[in-house]
Image (cartoon, rainbow, N blue to C red; front, side, top):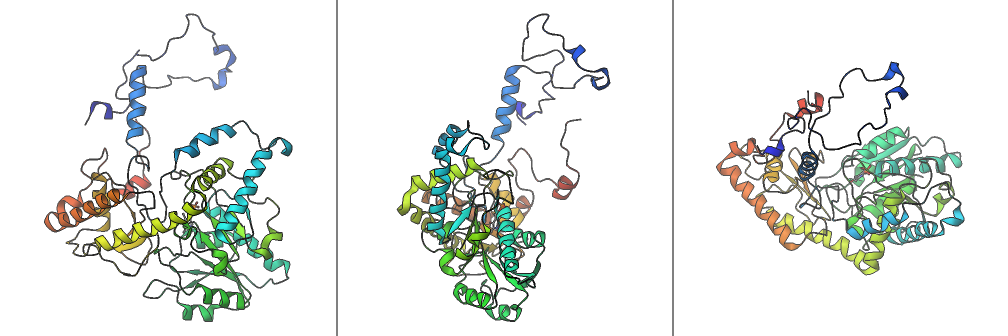
Length: 457
Ligand SMILES: *Cc1c(COP(=O)(O)O)cnc(C)c1O
């Protein structure tokens, strides 16, 4: 262990300080009522300024982010977030959501232009920018679907169809919205089974929630037929556009027949995410749902403007032609990795993928699990892919490289994945105890989650 890997409490020396205040400064003790004044020492570490700086600097370097390395976390679209976005946002820090509209014309213009840009990209009519994340957008969109049916006196539509491959937030949002979830199965090839869908349709169906490409990274080729069937029974189609990345400038959900959708600006439109926020999940609607979009019901003020602004900067920076390239390159990168590794890793669905794809563990696993592979990747300086999701496969490894990685980075990742496959054959024991070089090895994840030790005692 390096000296500065020590906790700041372990560096503490009684009496050491990192500040100096004028002699005889203000005595505030009289200002604090006796009943709430602290009775014991505060218990802060006593360290010098440089110890504090090293403590926090070292902590920051123990983190992993898109700015430190390749981050192929499937379904999360960890693309690089251009720094120009961060340059622009602080210039809007001085505004307040309650100031008169006539003083924030520029902000209104950003919203109007974003509405038009996203409408052009998705084929929707208009967007609301209130939802603060993807799941929040799902809930908003489902509420719009419910409003639509209720406005027509169509009160029996209490069920929503969700494919078995859906992202977990889909059924969760539907349940929060008070809808009953009906699962439609996928076929062997990973696509929604139209024959399984048909008997589910009826006058009690509010609609269907779909992701296209789905969570396996596969394009639902039967989407036109599915749209006709669902519309035919009076239901609406909800598009989970969190993973819109590969379709950017190529295909539009509106043209596929979707009526309402959300986008994750914090995935597809390159704003920083992870660690819980902030995000933005604008919801777009087709013509017939526009009247229901008006009132702000799901959050106060105008949504997460800083995120919307970053996404706007990203769209302007790329321009129409390069937006098209983003989706195509993301698709190319994913297929390149898939084809380069399928002789070492089990590829359950060997078709062309979109932005991501799923391996089902090692081809010759020798007792080495997906968890072992993911942990070993950390030793080689790469973030692990998404693992054990989607649930359709037992050893799922879900890889999404995104378009912002160079061919050399993809090759380096492929080489390491091949090396791990070779290690699995030669030394499986070592892989069971990976990672070997990170500050924390392999914690017992159940205990770490149930009884986390969060403070120094
Ligand atoms: C990330 C994701 C979501 C949820 O988005 P949040 O912003 O995390 O709420 C929903 N659906 C899909 C397909 C996703 O990848």
